[in-house]
Image (cartoon, rainbow, N blue to C red):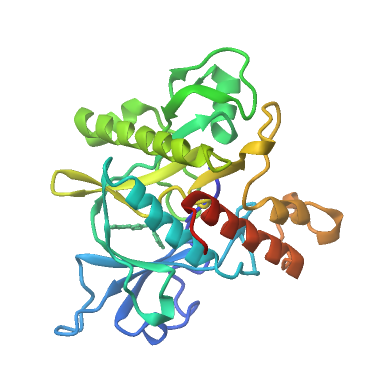
Length: 313
Ligand code: Q0Z
């Protein structure tokens, strides 16, 4: 999967961040992922953080090769927030979602959503429609992905016979999610709930691809998170954004090698070019991006939003 929402390197470090209540009055900072921040609304009557809602704020930060870059992509947070809200609406007949309102403080308007706080299920729900990344690695080693046997002879980027559910752990601070077999999800959630999230995850990716294919975008895979509202499974977090899913340009799809990324290809090409002076394997933080790479990358996020939704950003 694309690197998303591992803990931010400064998360939890006292003094590493400005006091969030000063930045966003009425909200208490809860957590920061790589590119998003989580707040709890403060109840004015008690002065205490509410336990029934959260504010999800998408920043303009971008990650590449497991680093959060020093350079922001203007409007990225708003594009992804608006895209996720649009997808929630497209999926409403399949699954309920956690959105309360997008009417949020001016400081974060457009890039934040107030959501219902759910009991989150302790599993990363991944579906794959095309074979690549970690799924390709498992297939090459075993002929199967997440225990699902696949036809022989598949190559990087191939369309799978049908989308498959390939769950993973929610990795602790700083670690990568690990693939787990479906039986581990059944053990954690019970058979009925495991089957429900499996079927929903696959249905979300199928619906996503039905809509995206007509707009020139392939959704290779996606990671979704579910929570419980009583007994009801509710779609949480973000959905079908380029940070939670691999977006590929349909007109460049050519199985047999790694596919270009719809959104991050300019960033990757520059970082791995001699011009950056940086090496993936150096362990060093990547250098700041040049302005032209920022402008081209911003345009790709806007293009994805406009192609999918048919609306002007
Ligand atoms: C999501 C995350 C971050 C954004 C917790 N509806 C919900 N109820 C309870 N918990 C969550 C949600 Cl969405 C929840 N995350 C991931 C981290 C910014 C989202 F820093 N964590």
